[in-house]
Amino acid sequence: MIAAALAAAIVAVAVWAGVRARLRWRSIRAEFLRPWPAVVVFTSTDCDACNPVRETVLSASPAKAVREVAYQRDAGKFRSSGIDKVPAVVVIDAHGKPVGFFEGAVSSREIGRALRRARLR
Image (cartoon, rainbow, N blue to C red; front, side):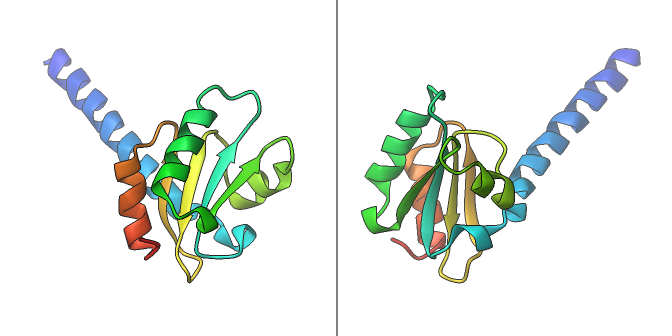
């Protein structure tokens, strides 16, 4: 009985963490990331995972839409946009609505889906 309750609690925490991660991108403040539409890649010079993410985004996105924000150059944009981890990618449609948010590794397929929602592809 205790094992079942513990298992249920673990599942509940895992589900909540997944829901929270999916909802987090909706809180990104895109007004600080103009012009739109855009694919904004948040990076840092001391981030080993940032280069592969940057390359994936560049290969999957229209070049004119991609912008990089490096923490060392523009920490204020990180704070004002609500970004607190790198690498992070935000896809913003022409109305300034974030339609995709990714933290960590991202595939070109995931970027492609967000680009279609933003009508960039």
